[in-house]
Length: 274
Image (tube, rainbow, N blue to C red; front, side, top):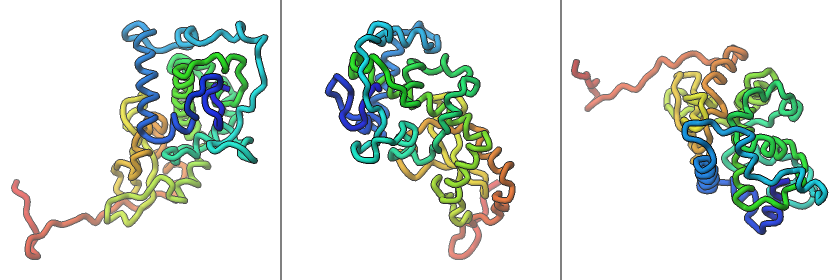
Protein backbone atom coordinates (compact mmCIF):
# COMPACT_ATOMS: atom_id res chain seq x y z
CA UNK A 1 0.00 0.00 0.00
CA UNK A 2 1.04 3.62 0.09
CA UNK A 3 2.63 3.33 3.48
CA UNK A 4 3.51 0.47 5.77
CA UNK A 5 2.13 1.10 9.25
CA UNK A 6 5.18 -0.15 11.05
CA UNK A 7 8.05 0.70 8.73
CA UNK A 8 7.00 4.08 7.37
CA UNK A 9 6.67 5.23 3.77
CA UNK A 10 7.56 2.44 1.43
CA UNK A 11 10.65 3.15 -0.56
CA UNK A 12 11.11 6.65 0.87
CA UNK A 13 12.42 6.08 4.39
CA UNK A 14 9.91 8.62 5.69
CA UNK A 15 7.96 8.77 8.90
CA UNK A 16 5.26 6.27 9.89
CA UNK A 17 1.55 6.75 9.37
CA UNK A 18 1.08 7.42 13.08
CA UNK A 19 3.51 10.32 12.82
CA UNK A 20 1.45 11.82 9.99
CA UNK A 21 -2.03 11.62 11.42
CA UNK A 22 -1.76 11.41 15.19
CA UNK A 23 -2.26 14.78 16.84
CA UNK A 24 -3.34 18.19 15.71
CA UNK A 25 0.08 19.40 14.54
CA UNK A 26 0.70 16.59 12.07
CA UNK A 27 -2.90 16.66 10.86
CA UNK A 28 -2.57 20.37 10.11
CA UNK A 29 0.75 19.81 8.30
CA UNK A 30 -0.76 17.19 6.03
CA UNK A 31 -3.77 19.35 5.20
CA UNK A 32 -1.51 22.30 4.45
CA UNK A 33 0.53 20.12 2.10
CA UNK A 34 -2.66 19.02 0.36
CA UNK A 35 -3.95 22.59 0.02
CA UNK A 36 -0.62 23.80 -1.28
CA UNK A 37 -0.46 21.02 -3.85
CA UNK A 38 -4.01 21.62 -5.04
CA UNK A 39 -3.42 25.34 -5.48
CA UNK A 40 -0.50 24.55 -7.78
CA UNK A 41 -2.32 21.99 -9.88
CA UNK A 42 -5.92 23.18 -10.13
CA UNK A 43 -7.44 26.20 -11.90
CA UNK A 44 -8.64 28.93 -9.59
CA UNK A 45 -12.13 28.29 -8.26
CA UNK A 46 -12.34 24.70 -9.49
CA UNK A 47 -12.99 21.59 -7.41
CA UNK A 48 -10.35 18.86 -7.23
CA UNK A 49 -11.14 15.96 -9.52
CA UNK A 50 -9.85 12.45 -9.74
CA UNK A 51 -8.29 12.89 -13.16
CA UNK A 52 -6.43 16.07 -12.20
CA UNK A 53 -5.10 14.71 -8.96
CA UNK A 54 -4.04 11.32 -10.24
CA UNK A 55 -1.98 12.79 -13.03
CA UNK A 56 0.74 13.63 -10.53
CA UNK A 57 1.04 10.08 -9.22
CA UNK A 58 2.73 7.16 -10.97
CA UNK A 59 0.60 5.40 -13.58
CA UNK A 60 -0.36 1.93 -12.43
CA UNK A 61 0.19 0.52 -15.93
CA UNK A 62 3.80 1.70 -15.90
CA UNK A 63 4.63 -0.27 -12.79
CA UNK A 64 2.39 -3.33 -13.16
CA UNK A 65 5.29 -5.58 -14.10
CA UNK A 66 7.26 -4.58 -11.02
CA UNK A 67 4.44 -5.26 -8.57
CA UNK A 68 5.56 -6.91 -5.36
CA UNK A 69 3.19 -8.22 -2.70
CA UNK A 70 3.24 -6.28 0.53
CA UNK A 71 1.36 -6.65 3.77
CA UNK A 72 -0.79 -3.53 4.01
CA UNK A 73 -2.58 -4.59 7.15
CA UNK A 74 -1.31 -3.93 10.61
CA UNK A 75 -1.72 -1.57 13.48
CA UNK A 76 0.00 1.59 14.48
CA UNK A 77 2.46 -0.41 16.55
CA UNK A 78 3.00 -3.14 13.95
CA UNK A 79 3.92 -6.77 14.42
CA UNK A 80 2.16 -9.71 16.03
CA UNK A 81 -1.55 -10.26 15.68
CA UNK A 82 -2.03 -6.54 14.99
CA UNK A 83 -0.91 -7.16 11.40
CA UNK A 84 -4.48 -8.18 10.58
CA UNK A 85 -5.91 -4.81 11.61
CA UNK A 86 -7.72 -3.07 8.77
CA UNK A 87 -7.06 0.55 7.83
CA UNK A 88 -10.57 1.50 8.97
CA UNK A 89 -10.10 -0.06 12.40
CA UNK A 90 -6.63 1.46 12.71
CA UNK A 91 -7.88 4.93 11.75
CA UNK A 92 -10.84 4.88 14.17
CA UNK A 93 -8.54 3.91 17.02
CA UNK A 94 -6.16 6.82 16.51
CA UNK A 95 -6.06 9.38 19.30
CA UNK A 96 -8.57 12.09 18.50
CA UNK A 97 -10.71 9.88 16.25
CA UNK A 98 -12.91 8.52 19.03
CA UNK A 99 -15.99 10.15 17.49
CA UNK A 100 -15.72 7.99 14.36
CA UNK A 101 -17.40 4.60 14.11
CA UNK A 102 -16.11 1.83 11.88
CA UNK A 103 -17.86 1.88 8.51
CA UNK A 104 -18.63 -1.58 7.10
CA UNK A 105 -16.37 -2.42 4.18
CA UNK A 106 -19.40 -3.65 2.24
CA UNK A 107 -20.82 -0.15 2.49
CA UNK A 108 -17.57 1.38 1.24
CA UNK A 109 -17.37 -1.07 -1.67
CA UNK A 110 -20.84 -0.15 -2.92
CA UNK A 111 -20.37 2.53 -5.59
CA UNK A 112 -23.89 3.82 -5.01
CA UNK A 113 -22.92 4.93 -1.50
CA UNK A 114 -19.93 6.86 -2.86
CA UNK A 115 -21.84 8.74 -5.54
CA UNK A 116 -20.43 12.23 -6.08
CA UNK A 117 -17.38 11.84 -3.85
CA UNK A 118 -14.85 11.36 -6.64
CA UNK A 119 -15.22 15.01 -7.58
CA UNK A 120 -14.71 16.21 -4.01
CA UNK A 121 -11.66 14.19 -3.01
CA UNK A 122 -8.29 14.46 -4.80
CA UNK A 123 -6.45 11.18 -5.47
CA UNK A 124 -9.83 9.48 -5.06
CA UNK A 125 -8.91 6.04 -6.41
CA UNK A 126 -5.68 5.86 -4.44
CA UNK A 127 -7.44 7.01 -1.26
CA UNK A 128 -10.21 4.43 -1.71
CA UNK A 129 -7.66 1.64 -2.23
CA UNK A 130 -5.93 2.70 0.98
CA UNK A 131 -9.17 2.63 2.97
CA UNK A 132 -10.03 -0.85 1.65
CA UNK A 133 -6.47 -2.18 2.12
CA UNK A 134 -6.11 -2.88 -1.59
CA UNK A 135 -2.50 -3.43 -2.64
CA UNK A 136 -1.02 -0.91 -5.03
CA UNK A 137 1.56 -1.82 -7.64
CA UNK A 138 3.21 1.59 -7.56
CA UNK A 139 3.48 2.27 -3.84
CA UNK A 140 7.27 2.00 -3.92
CA UNK A 141 7.46 4.81 -6.47
CA UNK A 142 5.57 7.33 -4.33
CA UNK A 143 7.55 10.17 -2.82
CA UNK A 144 7.06 11.22 0.78
CA UNK A 145 4.96 14.20 -0.32
CA UNK A 146 2.74 11.99 -2.48
CA UNK A 147 2.24 9.58 0.39
CA UNK A 148 1.20 12.47 2.63
CA UNK A 149 -1.30 13.66 0.03
CA UNK A 150 -2.81 10.21 -0.38
CA UNK A 151 -3.02 9.80 3.40
CA UNK A 152 -4.81 13.12 3.77
CA UNK A 153 -7.13 12.31 0.88
CA UNK A 154 -7.97 8.95 2.48
CA UNK A 155 -8.86 10.68 5.75
CA UNK A 156 -11.09 13.14 3.90
CA UNK A 157 -12.75 10.40 1.85
CA UNK A 158 -13.42 8.27 4.92
CA UNK A 159 -14.95 11.26 6.68
CA UNK A 160 -17.30 11.96 3.77
CA UNK A 161 -18.29 8.29 3.64
CA UNK A 162 -18.72 8.29 7.41
CA UNK A 163 -21.21 11.17 7.42
CA UNK A 164 -23.43 9.16 5.08
CA UNK A 165 -23.00 5.88 6.90
CA UNK A 166 -24.07 7.20 10.32
CA UNK A 167 -27.46 8.11 8.84
CA UNK A 168 -28.13 4.44 8.00
CA UNK A 169 -29.58 1.89 10.40
CA UNK A 170 -26.26 0.11 10.92
CA UNK A 171 -24.45 3.40 11.35
CA UNK A 172 -26.86 4.59 14.01
CA UNK A 173 -26.50 1.33 15.91
CA UNK A 174 -22.73 1.81 15.95
CA UNK A 175 -23.11 5.40 17.14
CA UNK A 176 -25.67 4.32 19.75
CA UNK A 177 -23.06 2.23 21.52
CA UNK A 178 -20.71 5.19 21.61
CA UNK A 179 -23.49 7.45 22.90
CA UNK A 180 -24.28 5.04 25.73
CA UNK A 181 -20.59 4.82 26.63
CA UNK A 182 -20.24 8.63 26.70
CA UNK A 183 -17.59 8.43 23.98
CA UNK A 184 -18.74 11.77 22.62
CA UNK A 185 -18.42 13.44 26.00
CA UNK A 186 -20.82 15.01 28.48
CA UNK A 187 -22.50 18.38 28.40
CA UNK A 188 -20.36 20.92 30.28
CA UNK A 189 -23.48 22.81 31.44
CA UNK A 190 -23.98 22.32 35.16
CA UNK A 191 -27.75 21.96 35.04
CA UNK A 192 -27.56 19.24 32.39
CA UNK A 193 -26.00 16.99 35.02
CA UNK A 194 -23.49 15.25 32.77
CA UNK A 195 -25.89 14.52 29.90
CA UNK A 196 -24.33 12.41 27.14
CA UNK A 197 -23.78 14.38 23.92
CA UNK A 198 -23.65 13.67 20.20
CA UNK A 199 -21.22 14.93 17.54
CA UNK A 200 -22.51 17.54 15.11
CA UNK A 201 -21.17 19.76 12.36
CA UNK A 202 -22.15 23.38 11.88
CA UNK A 203 -21.86 22.92 8.12
CA UNK A 204 -22.05 20.08 5.61
CA UNK A 205 -19.28 21.65 3.54
CA UNK A 206 -15.81 20.19 4.24
CA UNK A 207 -13.27 22.44 5.95
CA UNK A 208 -15.88 24.98 7.01
CA UNK A 209 -15.78 24.31 10.75
CA UNK A 210 -14.63 21.73 13.27
CA UNK A 211 -16.85 19.17 14.96
CA UNK A 212 -18.89 20.21 18.01
CA UNK A 213 -20.91 18.23 20.54
CA UNK A 214 -24.67 18.67 20.80
CA UNK A 215 -26.51 18.28 24.10
CA UNK A 216 -30.05 16.93 23.64
CA UNK A 217 -31.06 18.28 27.05
CA UNK A 218 -30.23 21.97 26.71
CA UNK A 219 -30.22 21.73 22.89
CA UNK A 220 -27.02 23.71 22.55
CA UNK A 221 -23.59 22.99 21.06
CA UNK A 222 -20.17 23.04 22.68
CA UNK A 223 -16.54 22.47 21.82
CA UNK A 224 -15.19 18.96 22.55
CA UNK A 225 -13.01 18.77 25.63
CA UNK A 226 -10.12 17.12 23.80
CA UNK A 227 -7.97 19.37 21.63
CA UNK A 228 -7.42 16.43 19.29
CA UNK A 229 -11.12 15.91 18.71
CA UNK A 230 -11.49 19.65 18.26
CA UNK A 231 -9.47 19.46 15.04
CA UNK A 232 -11.80 17.00 13.30
CA UNK A 233 -13.83 18.38 10.39
CA UNK A 234 -17.46 18.91 11.34
CA UNK A 235 -18.58 17.87 7.85
CA UNK A 236 -17.58 14.30 8.72
CA UNK A 237 -20.62 14.20 11.05
CA UNK A 238 -22.88 16.74 9.38
CA UNK A 239 -25.74 18.90 10.57
CA UNK A 240 -28.40 16.17 10.40
CA UNK A 241 -27.05 13.26 12.45
CA UNK A 242 -27.86 14.12 16.11
CA UNK A 243 -31.43 15.18 15.32
CA UNK A 244 -32.19 12.15 13.15
CA UNK A 245 -30.57 9.94 15.77
CA UNK A 246 -32.86 11.29 18.52
CA UNK A 247 -35.87 10.80 16.27
CA UNK A 248 -34.89 7.18 15.67
CA UNK A 249 -34.24 6.60 19.37
CA UNK A 250 -36.94 8.78 20.88
CA UNK A 251 -36.72 6.98 24.21
CA UNK A 252 -33.22 8.39 24.68
CA UNK A 253 -34.23 12.01 24.26
CA UNK A 254 -34.21 13.64 27.72
CA UNK A 255 -36.64 16.27 28.90
CA UNK A 256 -35.56 19.76 27.99
CA UNK A 257 -33.66 21.53 30.75
CA UNK A 258 -35.76 24.11 32.58
CA UNK A 259 -33.44 25.12 35.38
CA UNK A 260 -31.03 27.95 34.69
CA UNK A 261 -28.47 29.88 36.66
CA UNK A 262 -29.71 32.98 38.51
CA UNK A 263 -27.07 35.65 39.20
CA UNK A 264 -27.25 37.12 42.70
CA UNK A 265 -25.44 39.75 44.74
CA UNK A 266 -25.54 39.26 48.53
CA UNK A 267 -28.45 36.90 48.01
CA UNK A 268 -30.50 39.28 45.93
CA UNK A 269 -31.36 38.53 42.32
CA UNK A 270 -29.67 40.81 39.83
CA UNK A 271 -32.14 42.48 37.50
CA UNK A 272 -30.93 43.19 34.02
CA UNK A 273 -31.52 46.64 32.57
CA UNK A 274 -34.23 46.79 29.96
